[in-house]
Length: 234
Image (cartoon, rainbow, N blue to C red; front, side, top):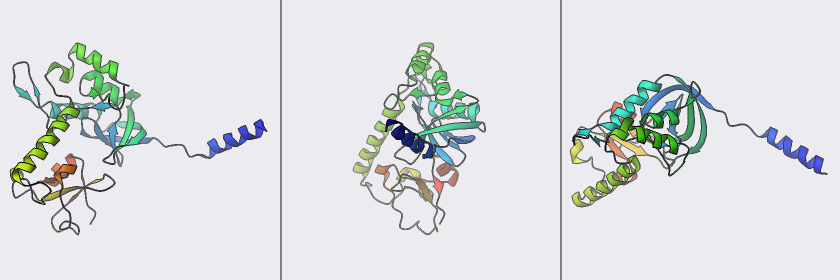
């Protein structure tokens, strides 16, 4: 009886489809987000400075560490073939994955070089790598940098405060600082997909922008694509 049960379990395991790896050339979106083929991937276990984030040098000057980190990732990996193991899906609909290029773990390479931090909220895989980079003052560790997660938290709080003070909360009106020319609507769908709508497209008028959800306005399509949005098909 035990042998029969074991055989049934084996057959069941063989019948289950294996999760296929994601393969293709790397297209860098920012310091911890890439496209591999047609899949948008959030690299597992790391957190890079936001593209617009600045750090402070030892002389007290602001330095665009977020843009620098993105450029470093692009210089190292853009266009190279990657193989990614999907682990999860984040709230924005991105595939959370561990990716390798030429046998090297991308996340580990980025943390060791000081281009990103270990994202300990979700994984301790790169904890020791970050500590080694910190001791050696590699990359962003040579500057005064707010942790990216904390930076995002502060930025969201500031946005809520500004909206309350200006009366813009939940209004479908572009922020004054963006000017009247920024008419592209960056919407986030219920399943977390980031889609932008151009004036004249079918759903442009009915689309409402809620900045508290992370939705935003863009001035150009290049800006929208660079931030991780794709154009609506209709």
